[in-house]
Structures are given as structure tokens and as C-alpha cells.
Length: 403
Ligand SMILES: Nc1ccn([C@@H]2O[C@H](COP(=O)(O)OP(=O)(O)OP(=O)(O)O)[C@@H](O)[C@H]2O)c(=O)n1
Image: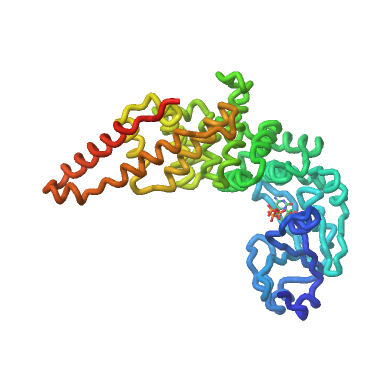
């Protein structure tokens, strides 16, 4: 509910993603406003609370939506943080829109429903083009990742990046500006891109403009690595096919991320878990994301070659995945294996029997409880040994079914 008394006293415009998504008939998740002709004192007097520390952003007293004073930005130092913001009642709406990244993000809507569109964002929306607003685009290297992310999000609508914008993205990347982005920022963009409908577009574009080379060189190298399967020209195609299949199977970022990791040869070896750890510290991966990528790269081949596994190897797989305590983690691990297996076979709808087999086995193994052995008088380590033996027995008596 908006408070009309407050809204009548300021000159506010809906801006950015909300206008863009409204025009695309997509659900608007967040509404941001720009306020023209006001100042900090007036906003506070109207009951807004200030939240921005680098520039004046306020929360509306009733809706809690974000209202920022119109501002200009000027690049000072290197990288993402080197900006000076200037806000004053004289800064116009057009000046505020000019500092923005893409024309489709640089439109405003007034409270009468009029669209203010000085950079032809509506035309670019109709033409399905992501185009930068001004040469100042290059002042913020994060925009390289943002544009790739928007391209991934709107790919299903036919959006592409304008050639001249791609040229600026390459320029930023080749000038080494991406190094100034913190691991956290980069991971945030990657994680967001992974939630989109076509995240493979994000990585493809970042490769094309030479950004991937800096932010995730191990993945970028795959474009040079030949694939051993005839379905794919190089390992990058394998990685992106894994990801595309993972997207079909799940919304979970961790699974989608791990499916990409499986195509990276260095990470694929059980003997080199430190590779993931190194990647994790560089990209500031959340613990769970790291753990799934690590376990999936180390252990997925046991599932791919399930027919060759001894009962001991299967039990060891269960133990290493801590399946006795972590149901959901095991399910996630199996989905990573499934995505890769189906992608490699180029059979997205094929049954992944290894998953059903392992889940059934696990269910049976979980019926074994310590109680029965305690009742037999066993104590301490003997209980654990007896339980392991019983689990092995179950696995031995339930081999993987022949085709
Ligand atoms: N590096 C950035 C970040 C933001 N913006 C501008 O600030 C607006 C709001 O930013 P944000 O909320 O991050 O993006 P949205 O466009 O709302 O996108 P999303 O749907 O992902 O939230 C953008 O539309 C854009 O006009 C920008 O120009 N450059």
C-alpha cells in the first residue's frame, strides 16, 4: 500500500529492472525508484530511512521499497569501487538514466504511467537487443558479467548482445579490469546466472569476450581441449551440455555448478581435490557448493561405471558421501551424475538406472540398525563392523541388474 501523502511530496519514478520486466510482461520482483529534486533532509523528514552508505538510498516508510536520489557517477580509480557519486536536487532524471548500463535498464515510469525513455530502450526491447547506454559502460567491469547474465535470462525471448556492446565487454576484459572484481561479486553473478533458464549462454558469452579467461580460466581452457566423444567438438561443449541437462533436472545452483566442474579434466581426478579447494577460495564458493563439486568430481566415475563396482566400492561410496546422515546431499550428487551421463550420451530422457539402483540399495542398507547387534551383546567397534558386514551382504545380494 502506498502512502499518497508522502508520494505527492516527492517526484519519484519507477526505474531499472522493474520497468524493463513490466514491458516484457514478466513478473516484477523488486521495485526501485529514483527521486528527482529532493535531498537527504526532505527524505528523512518524510519518514524515509536511509540505507545507502555510498550514495543516498532510502526505504519508503510503508512499502519499504528503495528510493534513491537522482545521481551521476564518475569513475575515479580502477575497477568496480572507484566511483564518485554526485547527487543534488539539480540532477535530472535523464542524467540519472545516462549513468546506467543498458538501454533496456535505463527507462523510467512516472506515476501517470508515462514512460521516459531517452535512450530508446523500448525499441531495443522490441528488437531483443541488449545495448549499452553510453561509453561510460566501461567504467564498471561488473557490467560484463551483468550483460552476460541478462543474455542468459532473456535468451528464450530471442535477446542478443549488440556487437558494439560485445566490443566494449572485450575491451574491459582485455584491459585487465576484471581482476579488480572481488571473488564474492563474481560468484554472486555466476550463482545468479546459474539460476537462469539458459545459463550456458552466460559462459559462452564470457568466453567470447575473453572474460572467462580471467574469472574461471579452468573452464575457459576447455574450448581448447578436444573431446574424446564424437558428439562434442571440445570439452567446453561437454561442460555446457552437462549444464543444460542439469537445468532440465533441477533448479539448484550447486548441482548446476558441479555439472560444469565435471567436464574439467584436472578436477576430475580423485587424486586432486585441491583443485576444487583452490577454485573455491578464489571464487568464494559457499561451503555446500564446494562440497558437492568436490565429491562429484572425485566420485562420479564410480556411478558412471556402476557395473564394474565391487560391493566394497559401493559401500565406500556411501560412506564417503555420508549418505547415512545426508539424504539430500546424496540425491544432489546423483543428479550431477545423471546430468553428465545423459548429456554425454546425448540422451536427455533416457532412464538413469544407476540412480534408482543406488537409492534402492541405500534404502535397504538403512534398515540395518545398531539395536539388533546391541541386543546380541556386541559393543563398541564390533557393532560398527557387524553393521558394515550386514550392509555388504545386502549389496552383494543385490547386484546391478543386467541390461
Ligand atoms: N552495475 C550496475 C548495476 C545496476 N545498474 C542500474 O541499476 C538498476 C538496478 O540494478 P539491479 O537491481 O542490480 O538490476 P535489475 O536491472 O533490477 O536486474 P535484476 O532483475 O537482476 O534485479 C539496473 O536496472 C541498472 O539501471 C547499472 O547501471 N550498473
